[in-house]
Amino acid sequence: MRGTDILTLLGGLALFLYGMQMMSNGLETAAGNKMKAILEKLTSNGIKGVLVGAGITAVIQSSSATTVMVVGFVNSGLMSLNQAVWVIMGANIGTTITGQLIALDIGAVAPLIAFAGVACILFVKNKRICHISEIFAGLGVLFIGMDMMGKAMEPLQDSEAFIHFMTTFSNPLLGILIGAIFTAVIQSSSASVGILQALAGTGMIPLSSAVYILFGQNIGTCITAVLASIGTKTNAKRTTIIHLMFNMIGTAVFTFICIATPFVSWMEATAPGNQIQQIANIHTTFNIVTTLLLLPFGGLMARAAVRMLPDKKEEADEIRHLRYLSPFEPSYPVGHAAAALSEIEREVDRMLSMARNNTAASFDAALEGGHGTLEKIEAAEEYINYLNTEISRYIGRLMTVEMSVQDSKCINAYYVIISNIERIGDHAVNIAGYAEDMRKWGLSFSEHALDDIRKMKQTSLETLDILGFSTGSSGREMLERTAQNEQKIDDMRQSYLKKQIKRMQSGDCRAEAGLLFSEMLTDFERIGDHALNIAELYSEMSI
Image (cartoon, rainbow, N blue to C red; front, side):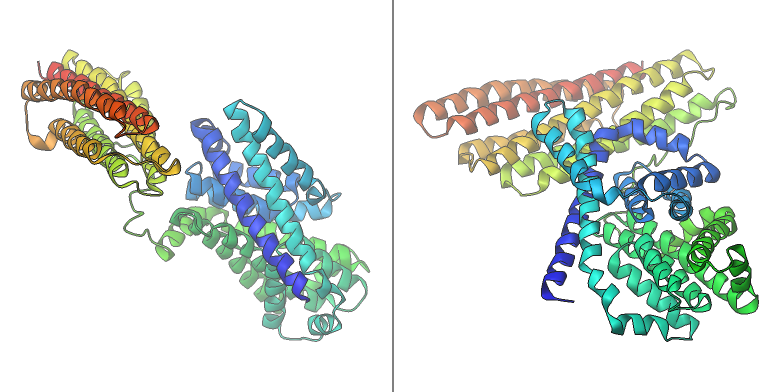
C-alpha cells in the first residue's frame, strides 16, 4: 500500500465515524418517543426483530450499516439491548439474502444522499425536517467513508504476495484468521466475500479452504460495529459484543461441522461446478442456521454482554429507567392504588432531585462559564423528560383502577406535580444556555452580577429542598416555607433587575450581558413559581 492509500483509509475512517455521529444525533432529536414506540412494536419479540434486521439489511445492502444503526439506536436509548440482539441476527441473514439477489450499490448514490441531507439542513427552516435530513446526511457520509476505506484497500487485490498467502494454507484456524483480518481491514463482508468468490471462481482456492476464510469474514465484519461504538455509552458497546458472540459461536459450530461431517461436499452438490454459487450458499446457510440456533438464547446473550462489560459507576444511572415503579398490570386488585402511591412518591422525589441537581449545575455554569456543561445538563433534562412521560403513562393507567376518593386526589395531584418539575428542568437548561451564550460571545458578568447569581442559586436550591420528602415536613409546613421563599424570589428579581439596569447605564455592564442576566432572572422567578405550585398540590393532598 502506498502512503496515499493509508491517508485515504484514515480519511474514510474519519468520515465513517462522523457520519455515525450525525445519524445518532439526528435519530435522537427527530425520533423521540415516536420512534421508540415504533421500534418497540417492530421488535417486540425475537421473530419480529430478526425480520426487521433482515429487511433493513436487504434494502441497504450492508449488514455493517445495519449494525451501525443499531449501535446508534442503543446509544440514543431508542432500542434496548435485548431488542438489538434480534435485529443483529436478522442483519446477518439479510446480508446473505442480498448476495443471492441483484446487487444494489448504495455507495454509488451515497454522495447524492449526503448532498440532499446537507442541502435540507442548510436551506429548510422546519426543525423536524432538518433533524430527519441530518439522519440521511449522516448515512450518506457514512457510506462515503466506507467506500473510501474499501478503495484504499483495493491494491491488495492485485498483490501477488497477498494472493499467494490466501491460497497456500491448510490450517482451518489460519483460514479463519485470514478472513477475519481481511474483512476487518476493508470494512465490508460483502466486498470480502465477493473477492473470495472471484478467487474461487478462477480455481486459485479450493472450496475446502475457502469455507474457513468465509467463516472468518463473518467475524471480521464485526470491526465496523466496534468502530461505530467508539465514544458511545456502555450499553451501545455491549451491542458490538453481541455481534461478535453471534459470529464467533457460529464459526465454532460450523468449523466443527466441516471437520466432523462432509459439509463441504454437501454444499458442492447444491451448485455443481459453480464455486461462486457454492460460496454464496454456504454464506446463507451459515447465518440462517446460526440464527436459528441462537434465537432461543437472545436474552442470555444480552445478559452475558452485561456481565462482560458492566456499567461504570458514573454511567450506572444514565440508562433511563423507572427505579421504583414496576410495569403496570390492568389486573391489579382493588386497593393497589394505595400501595402504588408510595412508589409514585419515591419516583417523583427522584425526578425532583434530578431537577434540583440540574438547577445547581446551571447556576454553576453561569458562575464558572464551564465549557461542555450545557451538553451534560441537556442530557440530564432528557432523563427528566423521560421520567415525566413514563410516570404520566403509569398514572394514566392507574386511573382505570378502582380507588378511594383520597387516593384519586393524590394521583391527580402527582400528575400535575411532575409537569411542574419538568418545567423547572426546562428553566435550568435555559440558564445553562445563557451561560453558553456568554462563553461563545466572549462576555462576562461583573462581580456584582456574579454575587447576585450566587444568591439566586442558594435561594433556588433552598426552595427546592423544602419540597423533598426527606425533610419530613407536613404539606402545610411545606407550603408556608415555599410561599415565603417564592415571595423572596420575586423581591430579589425586582431588586436585581433595577441594579442591573443601573450597571448598564453606568457602563459597568455590556448590553448583551445585561440582556442575558435579565432573562436569567425571569427563569429564576419561574423556578419559584413552579416550586410554589408543587407545594400547593402537596398541601391539598394532605387535607
